[in-house]
Image 1 (tube, one colour):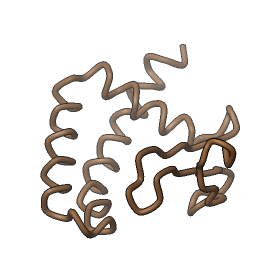
Image 2 (spheres, helix red, strand yellow; image 1 turned 120 degrees about the horizontal axis):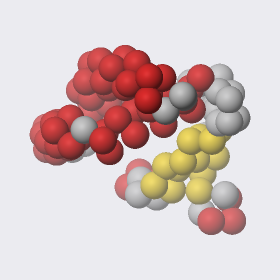
Image 3 (cartoon, one colour; image 1 turned 120 degrees about the vertical axis):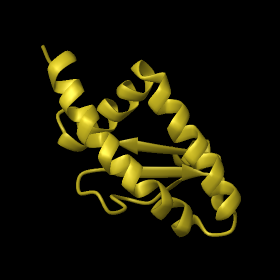
Length: 104
């Protein structure tokens, strides 16, 4: 990853994760790496897949992110805080959906 110009940030707040980002202060990419059976990776995949299957939720999330980028263009913490409630609530729904549909 370092050879591809990614910065390694270790676990970065989630035990067992390896987090990489690219672009420094103007981040262009980020990569989360987990063990295959990690509950955290399941949570991330459930969120991703739920948004893929539910375009109305994905569009709402997209609109929220655009609003927050405009509101917190120089404040990554404010941007992240602004997404937090939506992400937590959607993750709960997505995990139920994922376990009922993907893990059969």
